[in-house]
Image (cartoon, rainbow, N blue to C red):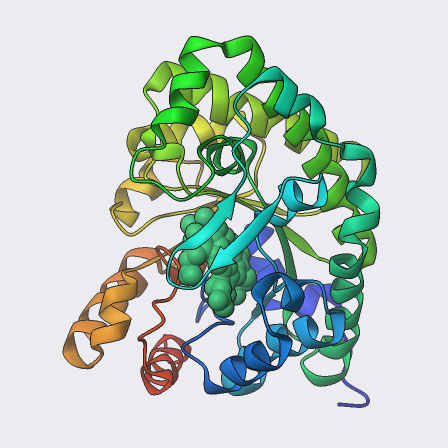
Length: 352
Ligand SMILES: Cc1c2[nH]c(c1CCC(=O)O)Cc1[nH]c(c(CCC(=O)O)c1C)Cc1[nH]c(c(CCC(=O)O)c1C)Cc1[nH]c(c(C)c1CCC(=O)O)C2
């Protein structure tokens, strides 16, 4: 759109992150690029496997932009995965159809010693190139949409690295944290440094916001949550701040429950992603009034649609009106979601 300025102050999502109660609220959806969209499935089939897609900049940029074209979302999240950091450090990874991610588990000092952070930047270069392409694409096609870069938080990425696959309780990873905290701490330290470099590279390439996904934070006892979620996240935030003092950061400690208050106070993020289980009004009472909240529609209500969707969405809007807020889901969109239900939701949120 020639002539339309890309001034950051005009971008609704950046204004909400800066503490403004923008209304109707800016919106985007976690996993908004994905298998529920036919245009995604087409490119995914062309790419072959998922890692190939994440490391093919033109295709990854295209799928990042698909939900922006279809729905005009206020946020475009880079198409990649939190497990690309361990992959970039040399840990073998593949995505088995129907089984999710499979990694060669890292469970002892020798395996951790084999990780090579020095090759991370070179291996991640195609992902950083995707960020550049998306930013240029947005400037042309959607100048009010904000580009969100991301990484997993050290704890959640360590969960997959130690366990080797998804799990209900990540017992091996949490067992290592109790049984050999020095070794687990070494892995966490490696992840803090690698993630800081990776996120700063995304910011250098044009990401305007960075989000930290901590999907499994809620598995931890409070003492462990402080040690393996709050402290490493605070270190990661400090490392990013040295190089990018003002870039807004969104933290998403999923299922953190009442630990959310301490996370908000001590990590240094500007915005909290709130998961589906949490009462948004409670979350608002537990954090400073200027802190932006993001969430938390149940992805299942979006699958169902109709009155269930309308009731849930309106209740979130009612609770968040008058404070800085970004409308989102409380977890990733389900692949059985109908694209029409997403259109309905966008219309609903846009009319406030
Ligand atoms: C835990 C986690 C992962 N990845 C992610 C998390 C944190 C958020 C959460 O809790 O959901 C984050 C993620 N994964 C993906 C994105 C891309 C951007 C977006 O949100 O649109 C983001 C931000 C793409 C993806 N990541 C994955 C897909 C599906 C791969 C495919 O197309 O075959 C996509 C689109 C694969 C993936 N990647 C991961 C799992 C467990 C799976 C398998 C589950 C599944 O298949 O849906 C690890």
